[in-house]
Length: 482
Image (cartoon, rainbow, N blue to C red; front, top):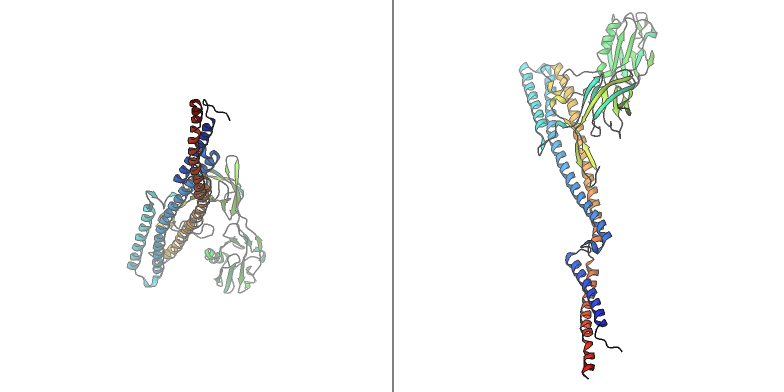
């Protein structure tokens, strides 16, 4: 056994183990006191990178949930105001029905009804102008899609939240045509020899009406009587004085209508109105596209209406035109839809378009594709001062109710299917991500306590052994004194 005094190797070894045990003891103490396995980058560099990314995602998910809940509150605010608009429209409808009862109403009664209508219209306008979420107006049209026709014979009808802002050329490939049914193959119609009834049935809609003809009616009189029911049957008639031609008043529909006469004999010839008589030319729907520069985006045609296909930048853009093939016109679209960030990452946004709910913008879509007309133009112009106007006003009010119902349905679907379902999904994602981040970063307290106890005992043992190692040179001193 060698005895040296310049270097105490045993003491150095004991000190090294003491230092290592002290570091382990301090690390365990830090983890137990903080609850975290990773307190600094040196504890687990790779784990720190992963957990920090997870923490960023968790924070983003939390904010996305808050965003969605705020969006839900905004939608509920708009929908609540539209509930009041609905109630006002229902009240206006009752007044229009009352006014149509002409035989029991005096001029003063109608004036009182009109005053109440005007008051309801003013209230609808106030709701549209002043409904706000914070300082953001919701129903004044500032959050919708608008279109301005800059050239050509095009009418902008609507856009959706998916329609991108831009300038679009409306290109017609195939012009919309109406169906015709010529009746001239039965001979000239000189007049009606005896009273008879024509039953006109539109096989597309199932609507059937009876037209009463009297002896002596000529071709033009017959045409006028048929056209009196055009709004119901979608059948229009014309004559050159002898032959009568029937036309479907709806673009793109087949000529599926039937006219049956109760009396086949008219002035020695067939009336030409027996079932199946005549040559039919079926109508065709419009076909075309929306062009942006050299790029053409296909559109679906229905009658004289073109609608941009889903999934493209023209999704939801709807225009009408009866122009021939070629460039029918140009539309400038501005999309000011509400945009909501409902995810933790870029691109996870949803949009919502809310149009103008003022009276001047409601009821304007009355009978767009049919043969009818809206003499008032919008809800703001309705009058119930006589029975005829009251009947027309009723149609406009019904159209306005349908439009408001559609908007409310859109808001409800957006709230339920997009926002609330999205929040549920975000909460599940947040929960799972927190669990994963906890596995990486948090301390397993039971396991760490066992490590702490071991390091504590080892630290005490190393301290004792260092004391013994430091006393070893005393033996050499005793030899020197010996």
